Length: 563
Image (cartoon, rainbow, N blue to C red):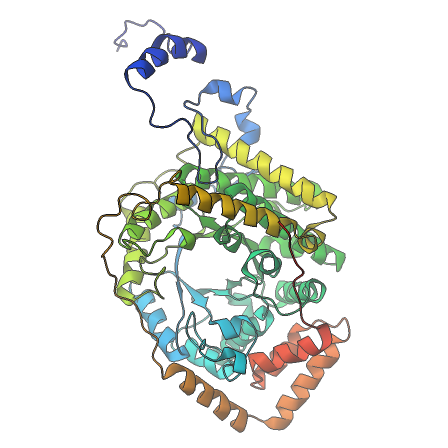
């Protein structure tokens, strides 16, 4: 069948951009000017009017793209991606008591969630018990309260840990919480070798962004290295660190800063483990990442594609990892909490949908979708179900999971991916010049860059330069109200009472010996995980275990960061 043009070659592809601008664009602008003078991403990267082959001169698709499942993994880490298996659908859950959260876990699993994700309350995150004076008023408020193994046993009651993948967002006390999880698995009769999941365990980003630390950087890295070594031999399917850019972005960074600082943290962890004598190919395949997905759709897609490309180069060329499994960047993504608005909260459903779609098209392995009411309170059952249904509709109805990397070859996407990669390398090189990520943190470099980016973005919103629907434009309907979850006043006293009962009923001699052994291990180079496990099995509390380690390691105090 002959083409409609009679076989003539189209002249469109042979024309240059300048000719198009002269013959078509200029008359068009005369009749209908563009909406504004400058178009930028959320991160203020300038966006050109048109992208074409001219923006990819010298671009080698074999080197820059490759094929799915092969280096540099731009197109995804699996050959079939979502045609073989959909991403893991997780909903961050945790509030009130262990009983409350256990009920929510069962609810989410019954509605199609495929992995658990645990949020802990502030006292737990800071390594403090529920009866600590500084915990007053915070117990169970922003996550579940966990003090001892008894709480963890209730949290996972009726949930076989060898059949579910669990992610736990905990950092400074991560070793203690992981030990509790392993102890519950032992009590269930599950083999540690079969457990799958992730513990966030990313303390470097705490110093940079989230500010939930206990010990100084050096001993914190020692604890993490001990966990990596322990899990490599005892819990081989467990992801020992989820290197997190999410909180860096939530603190106000640009997309490129989130990408660069996250990968720089990853470099710091790998270097720490290598310096401790670990074989990079023994532990690197169990490292994972955690990124934010913000409002700028294409910027987020490009960020995830660039992340895989940079990490592949880092592991292969910098650390000389021999196994291709060590070159792979596996990531969880969560939609941007900082983008949610209290005004017109129903709009958040649309924001989350676009952010989730960007994460999927960017090639994530796991995804959490925020609930519409999370800017006001912890999610209700209804809002959590809507958030989960959002993922399911993307997976089952949109068609985007039918082919691998459907945006590949887009002039715009490829140019933006290259731009994100270059900006990340520039920041990583600057960090290297400072001596690595820890010296950079001590000099306040990441903190300062993030603060400046956050200030600029807020100024752009306040001036109206960047539109936030329902906040600085289209504000009709601000009287919308969303039902919110209320944490009962009885949660804190009940949790404190349970902790008191555990302290009164445990084997005091075993408990005392376990804490003494932990202190002795901390004063040597002995791996800390076996001693922490023994303390957990003796029902020592989070606060008691962290307190022993603080006695040996000291407490971190942040220096002043000048802008």
